Image (tube, rainbow, N blue to C red; front, side):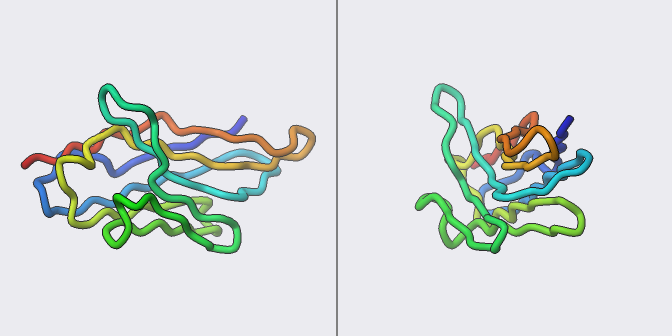
Length: 120
């Protein structure tokens, strides 16, 4: 069993900041890439940012320069620091992790989602 537990969402005014966290737990596992996705009402889920095991990062154009993804391998946790938030960032944010587990192999897992609402 692999669990992804997200935290840090909430309501913030435009121009404000939030930090999302996602902790991965399991047994006999290794985390490869991790990332954050978001889904706004009436829209498809979209990539926000990813970070691989070599700490190489990738960002959606809409968040470049405002969001920063990072990971703490000792804590099996990925973070998303979001600055200069605007109402277009309002969405449910989902954590994603590519996890290798003994016997099971490599699979992709998702968190339950955390709501981020930015008021104008």
